[in-house]
Image (cartoon, rainbow, N blue to C red; front, side, top):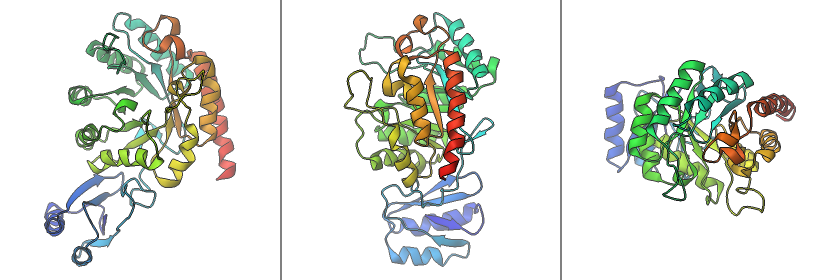
Length: 345
């Protein structure tokens, strides 16, 4: 990882870096941070000769070589001071709350519009809405592009940033073209490395934050962080970790709640953590406790499925969506826990 003396270098200087590292079968990936660019060496960076030649350039301050498999996501990397903004919120400076439908129902758009206004009033900062949905059965409702128009209309009416999941290249292109404020990578694609790279390339210039969910079958913490590395190495450092439950699940829960990995993520990486209690426990009655537990473990925010009339929803909403009044209480209590956490740090 190359740190230059100035926040950014010229195209000519970048070409000099590329020329040197290419001789050692590496290339340079430019990562645009909030205050300065990072010039990452992609490939085997162990050559002392390459290091010496880079350090000999007048515009290079230092070159950090890291043994970690995730050189950019590592807490020691030059991105450690990078901050991600969503609307007026700077993550890690205050908690962020995302809320909305599991699935935007194109047959009943008013439910989503009314929910959007209600979650804003409850204190949510971001509006979530399932536009395209991965389903176990190919016969279940898979989402609709019409749902994207409803999501954008809700943004127009409320002013809230919006987030939706993408599962393939076409959906990614539509999401970026539509100007979604955040993009979600779901559990089924958390290890789809080619898609993660494509997302990094497509969203880096626009600096769109990516909420990366943890795979249902993801094992070591390092595997989760390394998945995020694919997005950052492709040019977008605005990645947010999202624990959402894993296997094997205990009886009564949808998944095995994994909010307790938050301190481990914070110890290994600089990226913020936004926990999804809805998919962890999968039942509306358990969401408040799961949410507060996530905040106690150090989460930087929550993403919670919320519906103004859960029983009228489609997808997972009838069983795991909470109502806006419950969301409001969770947000208030989460902020209290956020303040209490300051005693320990």
